[in-house]
Structures are given as C-alpha cells and as structure tokens.
Length: 236
Ligand code: ATP
Image (tube, rainbow, N blue to C red):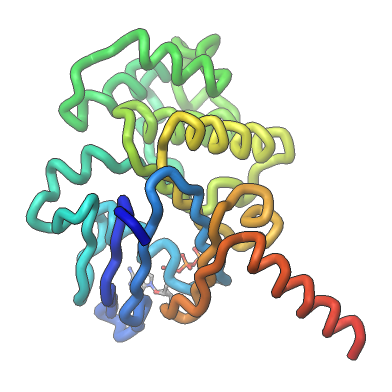
C-alpha cells in the first residue's frame, strides 16, 4: 500500500489478568478511507483503539503515523487523532459550547469560535449551545461526544461502536456525518458489531476475533464472500 496514514506492526496487549487482548496485529490504514473493524464482544477492538489513542500501553509492537513512531512523537501525533469512545466522558454541569471549545484548546489549538459554530451546526447542536450537558437527551450527548472529538480538527477519527444503542435517526445522522467528514479528507476508523454498518459505511473491513485480525478486505470483496457463505448456509 502506498503511503498509509497509520501503520500498526506486531501490536500486542496482554492485560495484568493474563488476557491476551491483541496478538501481534498488523494493519495499514489508507489516507482518507473509512475502515470498519468488525468483531464480537471481547475481540480486542477497544483495546486496539485505546492503544493508538494513548489510553492503554501496548505490551509490544509499534504504531506509526505518517511513518513517524507514535511513542517518540506522542504529543505531535496525538493532536492529529480524534476519539469518540463508547462511554460518555463529559462534565455534565458544563454548558455545551464551552465543553466543545475547551476540547479544542486541550490539544493546543488556537480558539476558533467560527469553526466550533460550524461543527455544532453540522451536528444540529447549535441551538443547544447554552444548555448544561446533563439536560440533554442521550442522543444529544452522543452528538456532543462527536463534537468534542472533532473540535481540534483531527486527521484521523476513531469511533468506538458509534451507533451501539442509538435510535434510527441518530444512526442515520452519524452515517451521513461520517461520510461528510471523509469527503473533507478525514480518515475514519470505526468499530462495530454490525455487518450492515460495515456494509453501509466502509471502504474496507477488518474482522477481529480473540485478539487476531483474521481478515482485511475491500468491502465489495467481503460482501461477495459473505454472500456466498450465506447462500451456502441456506443450501445446506
Ligand atoms: P466490545 O465489543 O464488548 O466492546 P472489544 O472487541 O472492544 O469488545 P476489548 O474491550 O478490547 O474488546 O477487550 C478484549 C479483551 O481484553 C476481553 O477479553 C476483555 O475482557 C479484556 N480486557 C479489556 N480491558 C481490560 C482491562 N482493563 N483489564 C483486563 N482485561 C481487559
């Protein structure tokens, strides 16, 4: 692959409990693609994302962003990464606008009220900008998590199971937003349990199970294979 934005080599994670959450994972992410990481509960999806975002320390292997060793250039590289985690992480007593603006400054970016306004309008949050977060609905809070992750204009955005437990309307909005971000040049890596989500969103799909990346395919190829498998199952 020419010039991947993100390269993962031999990435391993063993937790203190002895669980081998990642077993020597190799993966290249193309610049500007939407990559879906598909896998069941406990497969290692969150662990992989958490290592790249600097939340979990790997047991071995390396991560390169634009060919630069992530650990040696952590501050610089981390600024380029946005993360929407599964759980809501926010101060519920803060107003929405200051929460999102602060997320930008946290990464050392200069304040940019016009950019924050644009992000909030994109996510249909602008009208709620003065609202204290605890007064927002669950769906709105998930939108705030996305706004926080986008506030510092990352080049690579990780979405950890973005549509788990969200309603149809928010799921559709998220899919549209992810597509718009890709059009603007953001590279997107999302984790999901749902094959339909990978089919709807991704350019390429990786399947992870028990810490091993067992398959990486162009979406169209994967769907052909899965289609045959489903057909095979129906015939036998
Ligand atoms: P899910 O879809 O349920 O979120 P996942 O694919 O994201 O699952 P991980 O959360 O990465 O999977 O977990 C991978 C394995 O590592 C699981 O066996 C899990 O129990 C274990 N694990 C995750 N975090 C820890 C931790 N902090 N300490 C010990 N074991 C952990």
